Image (cartoon, rainbow, N blue to C red; front, side, top):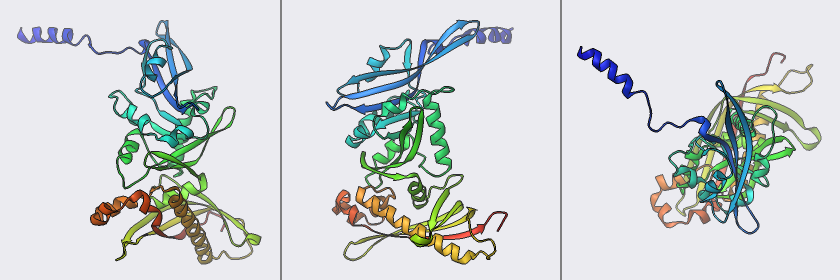
Length: 366
């Protein structure tokens, strides 16, 4: 009898949930953008999915762009919420786009809003846009909201090792580390309804430096920072100017060793050795002649080493410690770290990258 009473009481206690939130009462935000005006005000925009019940379990979904402007970030959410039906819910905001002019002033105040909110989506992708971020978020797509389309582009670029895997959580964590700078995806609007990942934006502290790397160079940078996704496709031109030869290949596996040395005069040298096995995808050549794999390995290695040095020079010029050299100094040379201003000393680092390639597949023809 006692068991029967318990079985009857338990379902009654579990019939409701005091903190339930119905979808029909909320407006889901899937993308946000932030820009700065000439007067210094912050423009915040959201791409919101508004669900309207049609009865019988049927819903109609509206995708709308809502914008607000304030002198500072706090309060933007209240202004936007007042312009839409239902309760604003940013717990599934997949992308956060920051316009380049605002990013140059610092992205910390933008990220902090999401990091301190317990309902924020900590896996949101942080992006720097060419021009106004709102211009990216306002693109109209026929099949799916633009935020989802951009998210798919980002996921694909991460798999192809074009951009790093960064989220709101990892960006915030790295911004608190004085020994490493972040790099973020850089997107631009190339047509009325087309968005392109143009490469990566280099950051110093929390400020966009104004310097970017193209998709081709960012793919090589990913090798230098030891981030190989599912694949890494690279196209190069080999040889002298008058006899250029095009080749494309995919990196199959990667081994990178980074060593930071400090001499008696506190001169800092960073040696980067990258060894990679590759699969040649395309290499037009005279099929009547036997392919010289050894020479081709050397030519590709020399070209990648040259480009790797160009990239490290760009990092120094932008004062962006994307390789985390400062963290290694602070860990292995703490006395030196305490007495230097890393923001000023970083530009004196001597980079010595060496890339060695080993072709293990050349396709089915040669």
